[in-house]
Image (cartoon, rainbow, N blue to C red; front, top):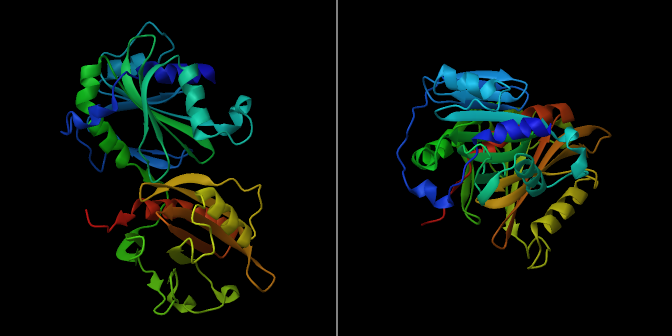
Amino acid sequence: MRRLLVILFACLCLLPTAAFAQDNKLTWDLDKKSYLDVTDLGFRFYYPSGWVYGSSGNGIAIAETQSDLDAQLDDDDSTRPDGQVISILGVPLTALTDLGDNPTLEQLTDFAVKSGKIKESDRFEVPVMARRAIWVVGKNSLGRSGVGTFWVQNGYLIVTSLGAPDADTISKSIYTWSYTLASALPLNAENLGTEKVSSDLSQFTMNYPDGWTPDPDPGQSTTVVYELADDVNQKMAKVDGIFLSVIDNSLKDLSFAADATLEDVDSAMNSSFGLDKTVTPEEFVFLDQPALVASGEIDDGSGGKRGLILTTALVGKNAVVFVLIAPTAERAAEFLPTWTAMLNSVTSTKAA
């Protein structure tokens, strides 16, 4: 496993964060036909038009030329690509037992950087598909320059990276690299429509799947949308599809202390919906703030069980809680890519 990370990091580089602002011109083109569905990791990756790709036990590589691809994929450390190379690797979290149970993203990133023998100069965060992601810039022992991005999805530590022969090339391409990662999509997500849920309090909008129906009278501080129109206003046990409740209220009105943390609110919400402490929430980002997404089951009030996706975020002094209830836990798990796409569609309506 350590060798996989060392090989992957053969393309990481030393660059300041300010490189994002140095050149905001796209240095390669993306189109709808040039993509890879990384099935195990759960996302679609759009790669530069005209580039070539391949895979080995060391992950996926995408390069400008076939010779660069061959050099990236072989097991000979003395051969190096001449141009830019993109790498994609997923490391099962179950393989990282040395880090203990439920390692943090910081711990996972530190482990990967140390294993890759990277001379790190900068670290910052930019979400990928609404998931929290850490970006590392540095240079490896072979002298290759690049930038790597880390996040957790589908039980994997995912590492994507862009490598180049020198820092100047990366400086000209790093904006395009960020644009490329921003184009990634969760696999098997349902199409989102143009209709949105919105909040004037925390000032955001979020698209929901095409064909869903909003409840015309959901109650104060709550918005509810239904997958099936016939489910509107039905008791939970009678609902056949998915429904989403959006709660946006002040910490005070929800009986939380003014200095309550995200973890405080998340723990209280999880407990109120019957999720125990064995549930490990996933880290997402909502309106540039940390958000936690937990999955589990909930009683439906008639002896049955329903699938639950519970998302909690803090926006200033407000708590935003998304309660998504599905007919079964399996349907909730199936819907998670769509929920990721919905979170990725969130837009601030706050005036600049």
